[in-house]
Image (cartoon, rainbow, N blue to C red; front, side, top):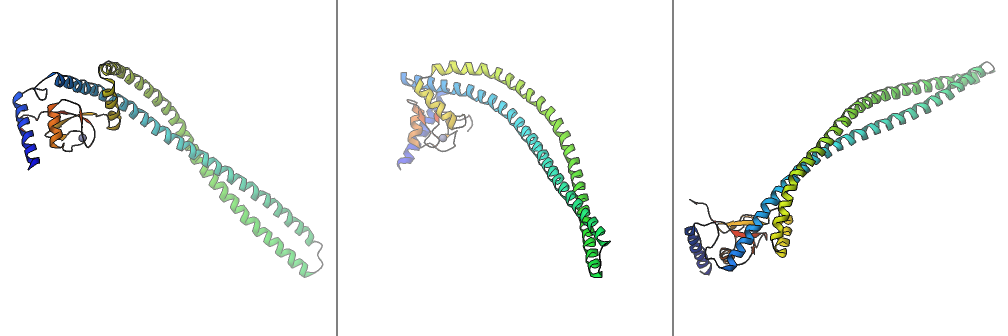
Length: 274
Ligand SMILES: [Zn+2]
């Protein structure tokens, strides 16, 4: 079987590598190999620094995220206070409307009561009496509604006052946290700056197209653009590298990418005892 033969070939290469007891893969060095090894070493070095920078960025992001979450809760509470205020105002409008209706009804009753002095027939009298009774009933219902509205508004006003005092407290705490986060972010940025300048220096050493490819992979692959291959398995996506490609990686004469995740690969020796 062809593939079997390939695997056997890899096995032999591995054996050879292990015997070499050297961190540089495939010891049969010529000019091209050492250049490649240097390039891979430069990239892994750069990646180490980039991962450190990413940690600083993640720290700042986490701080900002916590602050944003709190700001959002604060704004929501402010919004609920606004809604309560609107509800109270609408109830107040309704109450005024009812009171105007009450006043009208009251004057209608008075009008009828004075008319009653002048009625001639019993029928007229009964009819006015009924109208007065209906009016009184109407007034009673409206008065009850006014009381209900006022009680509701009182409860809402109480909730609103509580929320307002909470908002006041939160506003103070938020301002404190905001300045703390700002201070902390500044401190983190200061620490990060050292790594950024180190990064710039390292990046200058790397050929522009290689660096471009690395940066592209870095953004697409969650910061890890260069990974080792252990036992023929890419340590970025943990997929197997086809035997022929694995051979090429061991040869180390050009930069090779994982066929699955496209990360830049280098050969990593198996750990002792494995
Ligand atoms: Zn991969």
